[in-house]
Amino acid sequence: MKRLAVYCGSASPADPVYVEAARGVGRDLAMRGISIVYGGGRLGLMGAVADAALAAGGRVVGIIPQALVDAEVAHKGLTELHICRTMHERKQAFTDLSDGFVTLPGGTGTMDELWEALSWAQIGYHAKPVGLLNIAGYYDALIAFAAKMGAVGFVRPQHQGLLIADDTLAGLLAKMAAHVPVQPITKMRSADL
Figure 1 (tube, helix red, strand yellow):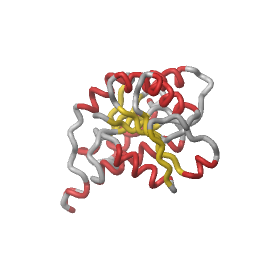
Figure 2 (cartoon, helix red, strand yellow):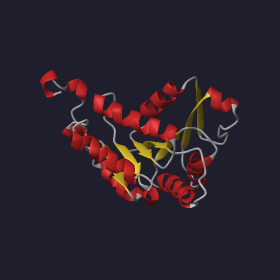
Figure 3 (cartoon, helix red, strand yellow):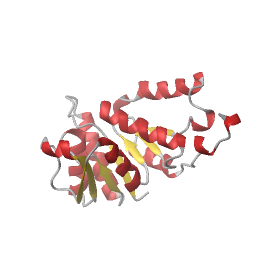
Figure 4 (cartoon, one colour):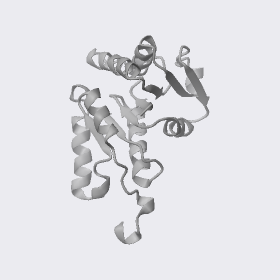
């Protein structure tokens, strides 16, 4: 994996554990020679990841809609900044430019990005690993919910391992590197659905 899309919040929560972890992710990815593709913002966890990666000599590519540039939240010091028209174009660019996805804590926008990456993997629009970094137990309930979707039968058995989660970046990257693409829905026969 040479380029990873990093999804995370544009907010800075009161608990410093999240910002510090985001900085650690940016620094560690840069030190591993992994470029970052992210939302192009300068605020919150997004800015922390980008700034730490850049400070460590890493390459950071931002993808941001014009509306957010107009709101003056774009990070102007990135290796590359691509301005797009819509959030849909932004998410397509994340998929096109990355070898996988790492999700840090965030809010509704981060969840939108994570679920779309998972959905696209399940359908067959990409076969890239989708990782979830469970910082300070932030995603415990989400991980349990993903397991429940499988247990109830809303996620097929072959797709239940698409969400790759770990509490450490090193552990998550190792699991993502071992990712084996699954049979997507588009390659199944109707009898298998």
